[in-house]
Length: 181
Image 1 (cartoon, helix red, strand yellow):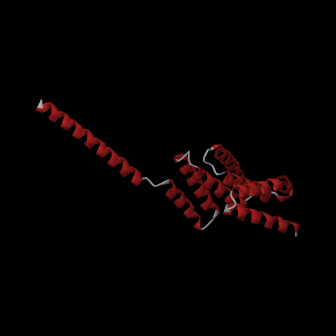
Image 2: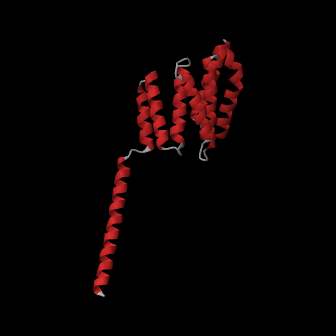
Image 3: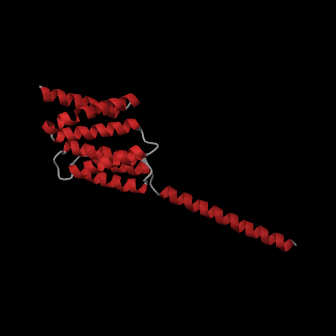
């Protein structure tokens, strides 16, 4: 009888030891893997010198991060934002049209996500229309003017503290004033 209890105690100890080792190993592995925030920060830090190549490299890294964290909004948001930044600074570059098409798809994906901030989505959509105007003001100005205004206004109605929406709306109005002068 004593030997049966002893065997059960030994088996239980082995079992507990195995669980402890497993938990230690999984915590150790997680500690070694960079967090999504750290990866995004590292990618964005490459834009200290905002050259077209730096933007394209950053966007490529953000796509990779988005693949690693498909259920997260932040990589999608940053990828769309940096793509639009590239496009507004390089409206006629060879990569611009592909980036804008991908950005439209990314925004559509974000809209379907439950935890998406609708104010941010409206801001990105307004920025997308603004880039279209920058690409060809004569053709796209009248076509997208109202869409830009509506999206920024909606973004600010949903979140009056959305600094990006405020800044982009100001730039848009400033650009429109310069066009009429």
